[in-house]
Image (cartoon, rainbow, N blue to C red; front, side, top):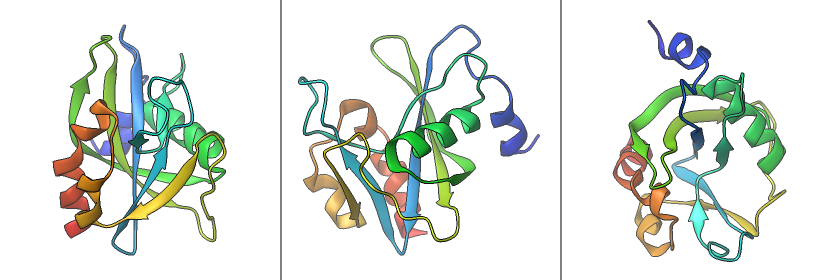
Length: 142
């Protein structure tokens, strides 16, 4: 079964799934800074969000990228392992590429940045996203 076939199946199976986008372009990773809620405002994360009932991981990630960045993306392979969050949700990150000519913009977040591998550690990450830093580094080196 290919990654596209696996991500086409409904994701929940009882657990809420959060998906993130590892968008790498020209050796840089797109990250966004939270504007809310207050307890995480100012922290950095990869774009993404919760998969809604009836959506696949890929469908949810495409919708989240439209809502948060104003772009269309193509969802690729999973990046790193699935991470169980303290609240019982599951967090999965996927490699994505931008549709031709699309430029991300911060729709729901304070800021967007394209960062290099050496800049990753300088950011104040959400704890869940921090778990993916080794896998994101590997993507940036590829």
